[in-house]
Amino acid sequence: MTTFILVAIGQIVSVTGSSLTGFALGAWVYQDTRSTTLFAFILLFTVLPSLLFAPLAGALVDRWDRRRVMIAADSGAAVCTGLLMLLIYIGHLEIWHIYVIMGFNSLFRALQVPAYTASVSLLVPKSQLGRANGIMQLEATSRYLLSPILAGWLLETVGIVNVMLIDLGTFIFAISIVLAVRIPRPTLTKKDITTRNSLWKDVAVGWQFISARTGFLSLLVLFGLGNYANLMTDTLIPPMLLELTTPAVLGSVLSAGGLGMLVGTMLMAAWGGPKKRIYGVLIFKTLAGLAIMGIGLFQSIPLIALATFFYYLPFPLVNGSDQAIWQSKVPSDLQGRVFSIRRMLAGLMIPLAYLTAGPLSDKVFKPLLRENGSLALSLGQLFGVGPSRGMGLLIFLMGAFIVLLTLLTALNPRVRNLEDELPDAV
Image 1 (cartoon, helix red, strand yellow):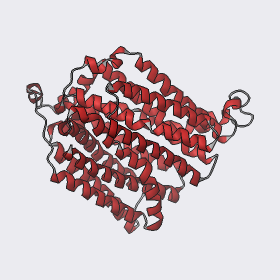
Image 2 (tube, one colour):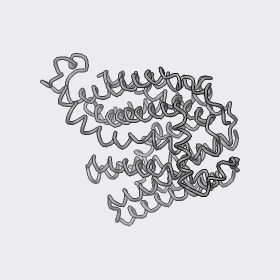
Image 3 (cartoon, rainbow, N blue to C red):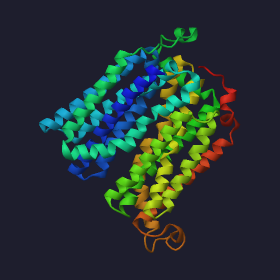
Image 4 (cartoon, rainbow, N blue to C red):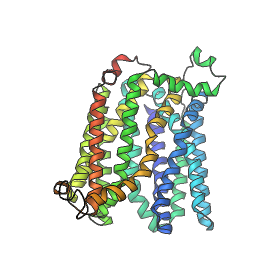
């Protein structure tokens, strides 16, 4: 596990640096424009190009040396950060510059993610995949727990240019580690070698592998629709809390969520998840949905913070268990293509969540539970009335949707028996 742990440390440090830049850049843009729409478009350009490019990126990752892909992708992302820093420093940064540069950064991310995740099964024994994926979840933990607090402080003390300079330093650290280690290349099958004359055939192989396995398709539906509900929740929690309390208290509640993710990450890294990993996905995803329902229902800040803690705690356990299933069942020479198709399909609903969260909240749910709203005398007795309560109802429904979706998925025998029915590739 030594090589994996070294690479993981580099990636965690790099992701932390990138999260510092992302947080600082978003705050800088909002302070300058006071436009929520412009801010949301930055998030959209950060995600959408990566999702659209993912299938082709996966095919390229399986053709190329994954170690070199990681180095090249991190180097390209570092150039994007450096260009943003330069434009801010000389005072010529326009909003469209951010969209274009973040779009290119997203393309580099599309190459880096499958190259990294597909390398794990080449470095880690099958019995340790759960723990390895728990360690990988430290990236998300750092993004939620450490980066917002640190970025806010750095933005006020040293300024956005120096924040980006720190980010460049973390890229150099990550690239240096990958340069110093050896990541083995997967052994190609005869069938794979004969189809390498066509890049588009390589892209299709990833989809063909997934579509031929009903259990994997059902898991993708669960995660795709679940991602929509999760992102809606993440988008609505800050404005809902700002209707109830101060920005300082909002930060404390979000930190409670980051702490929950840290606890879940430590648990996954030490434990490795249940022996039957699909149970880890289904049970902990249901618990996350129940916690979301509590966030929407409660009006007490301590209870909302507690529910937020238990909402984020299952994330590393769900994602780590799911990732270990795919890594153990997908042949290593196919993982780049399969994981990229999987990432694209699971993420298709993310742009829709960015586009619909605001209108659904402002135009539909807020009016329902305002004073004298059409649901004030019925559901208002349970949720309360006021500007935050409509958002609370929408969050509650997102949690209930996740619980129902997960239970329906659990009824599918192809999902429940996925690990027994599909042979191990690792």
